[in-house]
Image (tube, rainbow, N blue to C red; front, side, top):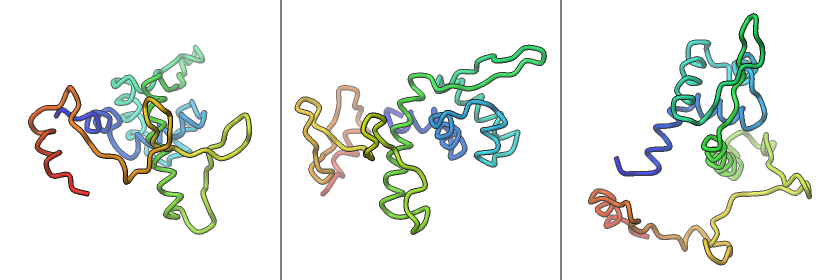
Length: 155
């Protein structure tokens, strides 16, 4: 399918993989820590780590010999997926998905300590663009199916 969104979803895989990427983005690196944080079974964790590595979202690094032990780190491609995770957190916080006590996790500017949020910005000017002012448009890689989808856009 000619679709960047479908491609990222395929590379990630599923909910468990997103939670693993979340944890790697938070600095967890070791198998046991990932298992404890997510509550995922050993089989599922091993499978998702392998899938993420095959899709170049994470890299496995040896940190101990005798016995060999590995840790997992985000690749540059995997670090970009953290933006998707931050967007999910932002939407979840807006709609109080995790409960009424407030966000369970905040993202802050390490220099100022102030909260940050993802926003749409004009590519050239850097100006913030309201979501309602954004329209999809066929790109240079669009195929007939993409163009057909765009004929259905109505806002």
